Length: 209
Ligand code: SF4
Ligand code: SF4
Image (cartoon, rainbow, N blue to C red; front, side, top):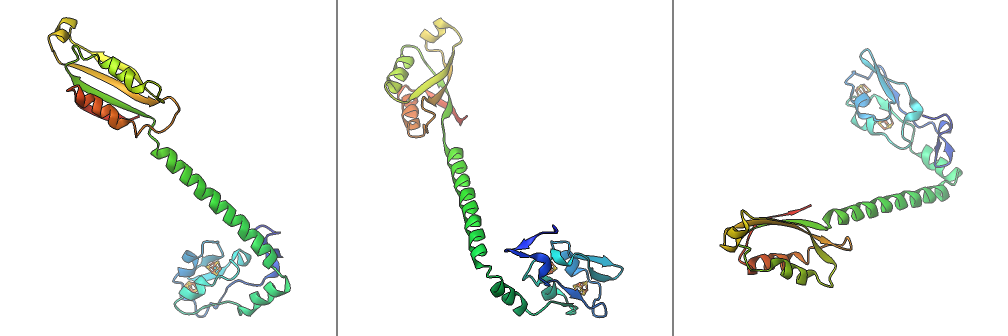
């Protein structure tokens, strides 16, 4: 514990709230040593000893509650209530609580914003196969995005031969659907699927990038 640590404005060293262990009653089960997350205890041989009393959290008595032999004692809780009254700590407590609440709200807002960004879909890759002969698919794609905040990029048509294409040899095409405003494109995707379907093409895959 830092030398000048305060408990809601009261120097922690002025608050005699910490456990004392009755060595006669202690059976060395180590539960208090294990339970306390503040390093208050150590085990010496088969006995528990308090080594950092002022690390104890004011008001906590968990170790005494779990001790199987009731070897751990604490001062009367009236001691804490008296200090609260004498030092009029509740102005400080409210201020600290308001800061805690603001921090929690900021964390929640950040988590919600990160969640919304994670759900945003701004680029989707399509792979389609079929006959591309005289469909003028590029023209239809142009029409679909005209005056709208979408675009088709990385359009890649793989066709075995030009003559083969005219003779209805199946080809393979991939393209990506994007937003020109970095906005969500999910509403637009059904129209793209419909374009594929209307042209008798097979949708091989659709993946979010
Ligand atoms: S929990 Fe009780 S009996 Fe167990 S080590 Fe601690 S003081 Fe001793
Ligand atoms: S009362 Fe809580 S903080 Fe204090 S020694 Fe026990 S377990 Fe640790």
